[in-house]
Length: 183
Image 1 (tube, rainbow, N blue to C red):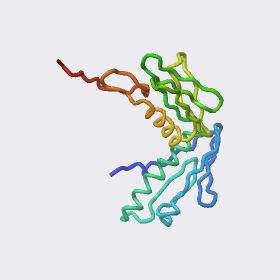
Image 2 (cartoon, one colour):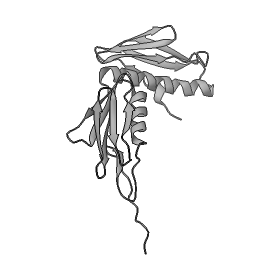
Image 3 (cartoon, rainbow, N blue to C red):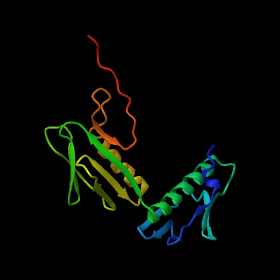
């Protein structure tokens, strides 16, 4: 069983947290995020904001759903605090003959070995920054879930090929190379 909810979330300098209706609003130098409180589950957790900390406690420690929501809410609040203070980023690169990427306006254009260019619209709140080469780029934003989801959408355009070693990769991703058929 995870003990993620046991630890309070520290509110760093420059970040403010308040409960507004059914949302927990987190404001910081990089923007504002809303964490939806568990209204669907009829209030399974209590949230207290005091001494630059947000603490989450389950209303019923014996209830399985309450304990699950306890850890989930604590991690969602922590991700929001980190997002508005530091932000999140996923570094990616492309490997293959002729593979390259470019950003034009709010669109990411990928040339990934297809007969056509793949054009992906960059969601609001996210930015894509090109690295030193045309094959390196970084997806940045304040919402951890949105950054990960868009990076996954890019990754699925051309997944890493274990036989040829080409495709779109996350930095640090290990792809186990496979040997081809033997004659």
